[in-house]
Amino acid sequence: MSLHEETLSQIDNAAKIMDLDAEMKAYLERPQKIHQVAFPVKMDDGSVQMFDGFRVQHNNLAGPYKGGIRFAPEVDLDEVKALATWMSIKCAVVGIPLGGGKGGVTVDAKKLSQTEKERLTRAFVQAIADYIGPAQDVPAPDMYTDSQVMAWATDEYMKLKGGDQMGVFTGKPLEFGGSAGREEATAQGGVYIWNEYAQRNAIEPSKTKVIVQGFGNAGSNVARMLHNEGYLVVGISDSKGGLYCDHGIEIEQAIVCKVEYGAVNECEHAAINYNQIEEGHACKRVTNEELLEQECDLLVLSALENQITEDNASNVKAKYIFELANGPTNPNADEILSKNNVVLLPDILMNAGGVTVSYFEWVQNATNYYWQAEEVQNRLKEIMLNAFDRVESNRSKFNCSYREAAFITALERLSNLAKLRGVLS
Ligand code: GLU
Image (cartoon, rainbow, N blue to C red; front, top):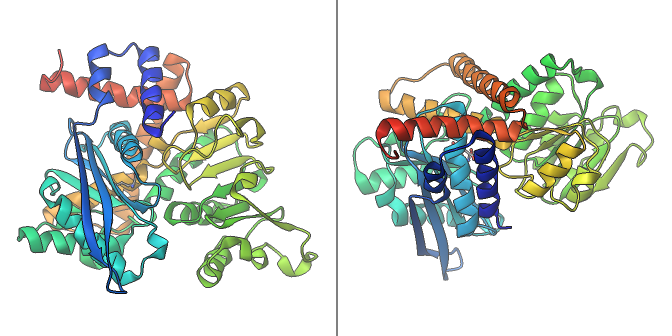
């Protein structure tokens, strides 16, 4: 099953449970527009390389298309279609007035210099400039794109179109139209819901061992936040591999170490009480696949899609899974996990904090009035917890999983909108 087929199967599954109108389901199965571009970039050695880029505009019933742009070697049309579909669903789960889109360039961003990355960003913006805009389609960061990339992208768009176009990209630096709290928003939104879930289910942080897969923006922030809440983070990883320390890991130290050594599995000395434990005893280096199968209570998936599949789902020891990446668990794995009574809090709910603060940034850009960090956090918390309540009540009503309930919540909202707007009968 391709990634896009996985999203369709998730929609299909929820549609059956809630008895969704067949026209509505067909309407959401296809993206409204697909833009595929090829463009040249001058490299530092003077050569010119061609790159393929995509922007998929899945649905704009609720507002302008919204969703990130990733620079990664695996990017292809199928992946971008899947991610764009999840964006429409995600915005509808949290009820923000934005639609769903996604973009990407097929490139190994780690091999680019900063100047090559800047030229690639500007060239991609030139290629898609006519399809995006503050009232049309608003991209944001995703894998291997960050606030610096958004600053170049916004600058390029403004040069092309003129005037104040600050709301064309979100996830910009604070000094250049960004919002307070955007960097941490993806992790923070998920942590607000996790804390609420933990409280309702009497889960005690100090007795809960956590593994976090992925150490990018979402992963490193969620590891730090959970560590600060008193959880024992015993495992972390990045694309080069993982580290599992049964005494726990000092996350702040691991963040510093990752910058210095470029890989978290070089960071044994970040283990809690490292000086008092025998060397090589309490920490082991593991692969990303092995990390997912280590002993823990909570597994946070914040790396790539398709990490838990039919091949490893039954080896997962965690009781709870909290998805921060998009699509880290496939539908076959969902079934196995649910049979094994693993509670899974899904991506479209848990990582919606990122796009929610992007929405706040877009509102601040439109009004040219900027909020304090506390205001951003309060509003984010309110939106995330309201979404969680709605999902929780659909879960009881339909007696289904959190993923199914989150899809149902989104599909109910989108169906109402489609009826109100007269798009469907
Ligand atoms: N790339 C993020 C996501 O997958 C954020 C999208 C946005 O802020 O528009 O949710």
